[in-house]
Amino acid sequence: MSWSERLAELGITLPEVVPPLAAYVPATRHGDLIYTAGQLPIVDGELRVHGKVSETAEGVVHVDTAVELARLCALNGLAAIDSLVGIDHVERVVKVTGFVASAPGFSAQAAVLNGASLLLGEIFGDAGRHVRSAVGVAELPLGAPVEVELVVAVH
Amino acid sequence: MSWSERLAELGITLPEVVPPLAAYVPATRHGDLIYTAGQLPIVDGELRVHGKVSETAEGVVHVDTAVELARLCALNGLAAIDSLVGIDHVERVVKVTGFVASAPGFSAQAAVLNGASLLLGEIFGDAGRHVRSAVGVAELPLGAPVEVELVVAVH
Amino acid sequence: MSWSERLAELGITLPEVVPPLAAYVPATRHGDLIYTAGQLPIVDGELRVHGKVSETAEGVVHVDTAVELARLCALNGLAAIDSLVGIDHVERVVKVTGFVASAPGFSAQAAVLNGASLLLGEIFGDAGRHVRSAVGVAELPLGAPVEVELVVAVH
Image 1 (tube, helix red, strand yellow):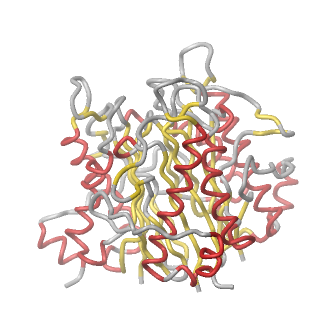
Image 2: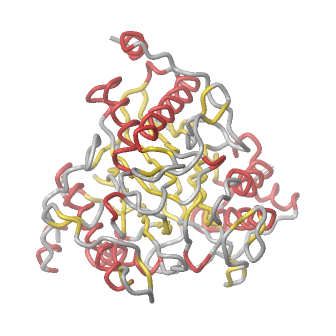
């Protein structure tokens, strides 16, 4: 089964590529690696949610919401890859780097990034197994709660 | 036109390589990729400006200054690449990662990093098109407002 | 002398691989590069120290402790590499990225990361020379003070 067929089976439609915020491109290829730009949880041209992630405090982004946002970031990354080489050319996911805009004391960055990692596992199975760094940062572009970049191998 | 000639045409002189702050090197080559260390806006051995970046508050680094600092970081990255392999061997820029020490609420990291991205476009044209992640962080080494690392392909 | 022999000579035993916190793997190989996941200073399944790093304030992690923690992170990274391909297949260290959970005003991230860089130099000598980015971040997973990821070339 191709990855396109797998996406259809899962009922997942890749979104439109999010235009870069600035003077860069959504994805580059070097040899058989594709690098994506850092992806924000932008849907239909709008950042879905603003703010910092926390498990408890009010007035911030709840961790459960942030998990969903990390999934959206990963989908945007796959859209960038698809537009450059076609999703069916993905051989495997190599690396995920995730940044979580974190309210003071929030340390469940790993749980947030699972929104991205589990999506990749769901789609690609063993070929979706990747290394990952999850980091809690002060601020992200546009006030986004999560940013995710992908490195995948293609053939 | 070689990149050296292009730099001359633009009136850009690559600076001296900034010595690493610690136990690492300015650039490494693996295959046909060059990775630079994270570059700070150091000129003639001194960090040009200290502090966190903001659009509004006083007593901090204004975003317009930070854009210039990101450009200096990129120049330092190119100097590191030049010293390792010679700038004329650059085939293309693959990836830029930028960290902006951000005052609370500052979310224009993309604008800051354009200082680096636009310089790369100015010099390398289409070969300067790269993916980029821009992140707002709590603190950078020496109190620097910006840190930029580059990955370029060479031939 | 093989790297195993060198480790024995230095009296260093690589630890057990730290199981990933979530849906990812400790190390991936693509071509002749190994990427590790972001490594925390976990020893025998427990995070050694929690908190943010500072040079002065009390109630936080002192920079000298953080240097040791960065060394532990690097050891965990080497354990991940060893388990995937065997440490003796390391050709050289290419890149180190280090994140330091930083108390306000702490800017000695470079000193902290030397805990990792000096260990790599001690073991691998010239083959341990790497580029490095050191960044001070708001929060790290589990409340860790330091996180380090490695990229190494193997043969």
